[in-house]
Length: 206
Image (cartoon, rainbow, N blue to C red):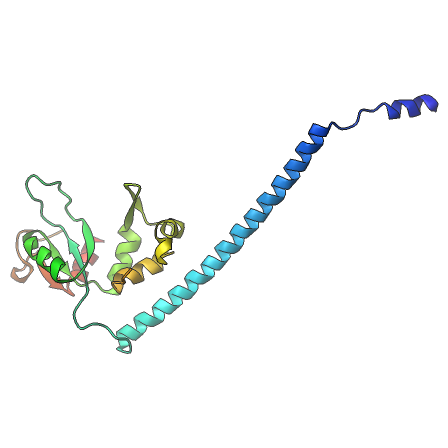
């Protein structure tokens, strides 16, 4: 019995360095769990915020359609599509962009009128263009807009955290198989100011 007791007493104690490692590991695990929980709660809060924003925008769009929301008589947003190349210039045929209309931009659009159709996109067209073909330039790289997290990282400082924010900002102009390409729209071609008819051209290109 005495020999057995002596043997038990001789069992080496857990080294201090191992105890410290176990303690550090336990603390790190707790930190990771807390961080994971915080991220989960943040995602949940963000989803709720995005839902509320989408709900608010939908109500605003309905009011605009029914005439209960002030809308400027003059269109403020145009969608411009390049349908004809220029010698010596990089050919970016069928590239389109949204343009805020003002005196300066209208004058510039007049200069390139033979090369572009332009018009006033409706909400459906803006939605389709952003969701199907929208991309952003991040660190000089062209990246498709497929993730709200991407929008939040790039535009969160302006209060734009999701696709619905982006669509609303563009559509409301917020603060923050083709025919002959050289023929003007009024002559039966594609170039020039199409006004609301730009939406038909967008449908054909989607």
